[in-house]
Image (tube, rainbow over all chains, first blue to last red):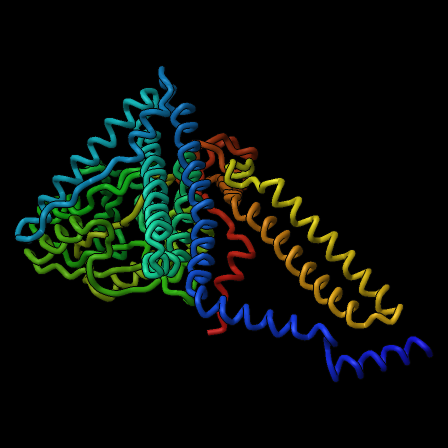
Length: 379
Length: 138
C-alpha cells in the first residue's frame, strides 16, 4: 500500500514539475541542441552521409579484394603458371580502353569495333601469358573472371574517389550525389561479386538465357563453326528450315553474332523470311524473373557494334526481325543461372515456334539467334 | 569465398570495450534509479532512469551495428545443382556442380543401363530472402 501511495505522489510531483529544481538543466540542454543544429546541422548530415559511404566502401574493398584473390587462385589452379601471376593481375586490373572520338559520328562504329577487337586480342594474349596450361574453354572463363574483377576494381576506385573528394572539399553536393546512387552501385557490385565464382568455375549465368534456348534447339543436330566464335546448325522447325546461331560454348564467350548473321544471310542471298533473336533483358521491378516477352527489333546488348551490323544486314534485304526476351535483373544476369531462368528456356522455344508458325510460310528459311554469354552451355 | 574476414571486417576492441562499458554503466544507472525511487529520491531517480535508458538503447544499437557490419562483409553464394539424365532409360540424377560441368556434356555412365548420361540442367535455387524481396503486391 505504501509503495502505491509513493508512486501516486511521485506521479503528481513529476506532472507539476518533472525535474524539480534541476529543470534549468533540461532547458539549457534544449537551447544548446537547438543552436548546434542551426549552425552545424548540415555538417552533421554530411558526416552521417560520409559514414554511410565509408561503410559501403569497406564492403566494396572487401569484394574487390575477394575478386582479386579468386582470380589469382583460379589462374594458379587452372593455368599452372611458372611465376606468381599476382603482379600481372594487379597490372591488368587497371587496364582501360579509350572510346573513339565521335565529334564526327560517321564511321564511328567501325572505329569502335577496331578498338574492341584490339582489346579482345590483348585480353586473350594476357590470359595466355598468365595461364599457359589453360585450354580454350578455361581461357575464355578466365578472361570473364578477369573482366569481373576489373569491374569491381573500377567501381571501388570511383566510389573511393568521390568519398575522398567529398571529405577534402566538404561539399554537400559531391557527397550527396554519390550517396544517392550508392544503393544502385552496391547492387551492381554485389552482382559482380557473385559472378566471380560463376566465371571461375564456368557455371552458366543468367545472361546465357538466349544461348541456352539456341543450345536446346541445336542439340542433336550437326553444327559448324562460323566467324567469329559462333556456331550455326540447320534445324528443321515446323516445316521451315531454321539456321540456329549461338556463341561457341561451353567457354565464356558472346561471339560476334553480327558477323555470323551477315554471313548466313549472304550465303542464302538474302532469302530469309524472318530473323528471331532471343536474349536476356533487364526486367523492371515488380516483374517476374524468367518472364518471356515478345517484340520486334534486334535484341542484343553490348557496345552496339553487333546491333548496328545486324540492322544493316536486315535493311539490305528488308528482312523482318522479331525478338523474344527473358526478363531478369542485373544481379541475375551475371550470377549463376537461376532455376526460373533455366525453366523459361522452354517457354521461349514455345514462343519461337508460335512466331515461326504465324510469321512465316512452310518451306521458308528463318534465322534464330541465341544471344548472350554461353559460359557453361555446350551445343 | 567470403567466409574468412579481412582487416576491413575487424571491429576494434576499443570500440567493443566502450560499448560494453556503456552497457554496464547504463544497467547500473537503471538499478540505482530503482534504489533511489524506493528511498523517496524521485528527481535523482528520474535522471538516472533517463540516463540508463538512453545508454542502454545506444549501446544495444551500437552492438547490433557492429554485428550487422560483420555479416554484411560476407559474400553469400547459393549452391548450384547439376542434373544428369540418361537419354535411353530416362534415369535422372541431381548432384552438386563440379568444375568442368556444362549443359549437354556427356558424363559418367548411367547406373541403370550403362549408357552415357547427359548434363541437362545447371542452375541455382534462389534463397527465400531473395525471393521475398522480389515479391510485390502490385
